Length: 246
Image (cartoon, rainbow, N blue to C red; front, top):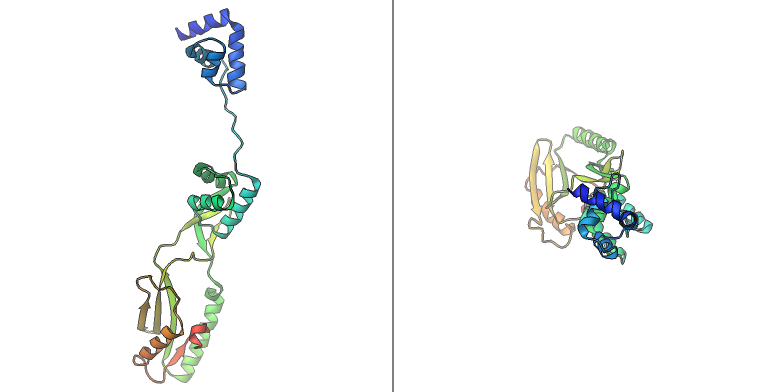
């Protein structure tokens, strides 16, 4: 029935059918505007567009607001922070540029730049490299065996109160790496370790409210308490951190 009505319209007003197809399909006129312009019903406009063989309305993709400069800045931002989220990318662009970009456009942008989301590969800091750790172990073993005294390892480390992100962005075919841990509130563990295990430890900033990092005073108090836990002739092994030299 619909096809019959459309065929009758084509036979009676072939020029109107051509004009509707030209203006709606090629020039982007709305179907409602076409019905008003050519004095036909919306149903007839629909029939002309959808019942005519090989006539399908296409929509031209409008040019986005994201400029080349914005894309470049975002690439640098992602390169420095591979675990950045779409929300953080939007906040970065909103702060840096006066143009507001939709969240959906931001979410699609990494894919358009051939950047994919994948599990990150941690790159250890220089002091954690295997060859350096081996050198330190050899130094300690030699001095400990030669002097026949108790060797006590003393150091501190921080623990994030929030889990780190395990996935990040990187170009297709390349791993996503995480070389720096994002700054978050941390608790600090100071510990003394023997070959047999822990001998003494303290946990600082357990509530995450401390505004400054652990310094010389806290470390000195730890050593004062440690002296009652180990033999008097023990050898303390520490690195050259500034707080160890106070």
